[in-house]
Amino acid sequence: QLPTKAKVVDVHTHMYPPDYVKILESRTTIPLVRSFPGSSDPRLILLESEVPSLDSATHQDGTPVPGRPLTKHYASLDQKIHFMDSHGIDISVISLANPWLDFLTPAEAGPIAASISANFSHMCAQHPGRLFFFAALPLTAPLDTILASIQQVTALKYCRGVILGTSGLGKGLDDPALLPIFTAIAAANLTVFLHPHYGLPNEVWGPRATAEYGHVLPLALGFPMETTIAVARMYLAGVFDAVPALQMLLAHSGGTLPFLAGRIESCIRHDGHLVREGKVGPARRTVWDVLRSQIYLDAVIYSEVGLKAAIEASGGADRLMFGTDHPFFPPLESDELGVWESVETNREAVGRAVGLDTEEGRGVMGGNAVRVLRLVEE
Ligand code: 5CU
Image (cartoon, rainbow, N blue to C red; front, side, top):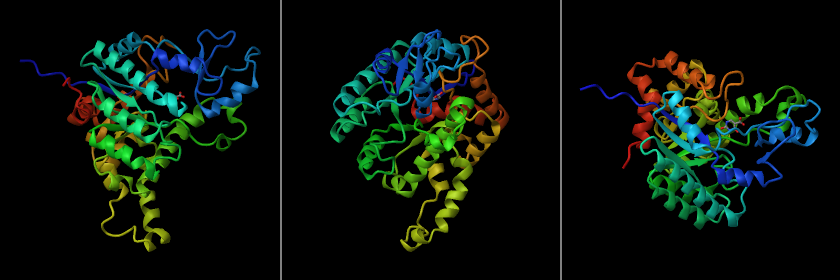
C-alpha cells in the first residue's frame, strides 16, 4: 500500500463572492470598486492610504490609478481551483477578504453575513474535501444578531472558524463587549482568523508615500503592526485568560509579535502601574504562554528569517500553517495563470526553515491545519 501523500493546505486565501463585489461597485467611499479610463480591469480600492490618490487625480494624465486590478481571481471559484491545482494545494480554507462586513449598517449586516456564508458554503460543497471556509460575522449588528450568526455558521458543514478584523465592535479587540462573542466562538469550537485591514494612520507614512512608495509601507509595515497592537491589547486586557478556550490564527505570522514578544514581556514586568495593581504576579500567563497555547501563526512572511522567529515564538513548528494570500500579490511580469512568485517564496521559506520533506515541514505545509481545523469531511 502506498503511503498517503501529505496534504498541502492554504489557510490564508481570500475571495470576494460576486454579491460582495456588487456591493463594492455601488459604493462611493472605500471600500469600493471603480473603473478608470485606460485601465482594463476595474480597480479595487480598499485602504485608507489609497484615498489620497483616489481623490487627487483624473488618472488620464499618466498618474497611476489607485488600488489594485479587480481580476477574475477575486470572485471566480474556477480560478481559485485553478490556482490551487497549479500550486499543488490540496485544500484551501477560503475567507472573505478585508474589510469584510465592517462598513455595513446594523440593519443590513445580519442578512448580508448570512448570504455571504451561504455563498461560501455553496462554493465548498462544489468541491467536497478541497474547500472549507472562515465565515465573516455581522459585527456592526446588535449583539443578538452576532450571536445568532455564530450559531448559524457553526451549523454549516464546511465552516471551521471566523475571520475577524482588528476593529471588533468599533473599539478594538480589548473591548469587554466582545467577551460574549469570543466566548460563543470558542464554545462553538471555531478558530478566529485575525487579519489586518486598517493599518496605521496615513500621516505615519509621510508626505511622499502616496506619490512615490506605492502600497509598500501600509502593507509591509502597517498591516503587521496593526495585528501586533490588536493582540497585545487583547493580552493586556486579559482576554486570553477570560476565554481560555479561544484559539486564534494570526495572519502574516503574527505581524511582529514573535519579534516583539520579549519586549512586551519586559515592558509589563517593568511597568509600575501594572505591578502596583497586582497584574504581574507569579500566576500571570506570559505572552509566551499565550503564544504557545492559544495562538497559531500562518506562514505568510516570505522569508525563513521571520518564519524561524515565528516557529521559535510558538514553541515549535506545529503551530504554523502555510498560506498564500491569494488573490493578492499576483505576479506582475509573468502569467497570472501560472506559478506565483509570492506563493513560492513562502514555500521556499518553509523549506529553508525546517525542510519541506520533514515532519515539521509537512506539518507547516498542511498537516497542522488538517489537525487543528479538522479539515476532513464530517
Ligand atoms: O494588497 C492589499 O491591499 C491586501 C489586502 O488588502 N488584503 C490582503 O489580505 N492582502 C493584501
